[in-house]
Image (tube, rainbow, N blue to C red; front, side, top):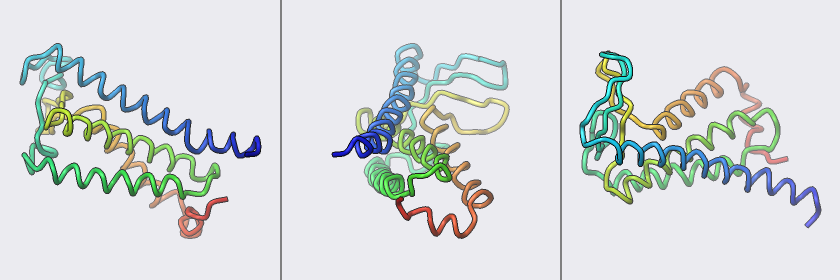
Length: 172
């Protein structure tokens, strides 16, 4: 293996794995802190009547929809992770697509974070609560997923031209 191949492998494989591991660890650490410091449904105001930490165990998706469908969520998450890994690996390795690659890392970390909860606990620990509006309680992994999906959507709609999308998967 040439020196340049070694550096490329570190950049393409090792660094992204470390990034996903750190992001996932942050998610899991925050969930462990909440689960260890709060009783179920306990709420602590951060900004009264606006934002609080509220410990809930979510067995479904947003607003608890599809509650109890753990196997379905695990299958969907596995499919999403496989697709994300495939896309990440096959995106052309150039600066034009760097932000897309970063978004995929956050998406992967979020999916893994919530998947760990579902496998280990049978539910996802949520704790960020916007009290001002009827918004689902969420966690760090959810933030990773939602923000990365919004940014991917924006990139595809407004940043990348048709020819960029066509060349995105041509590795160089």
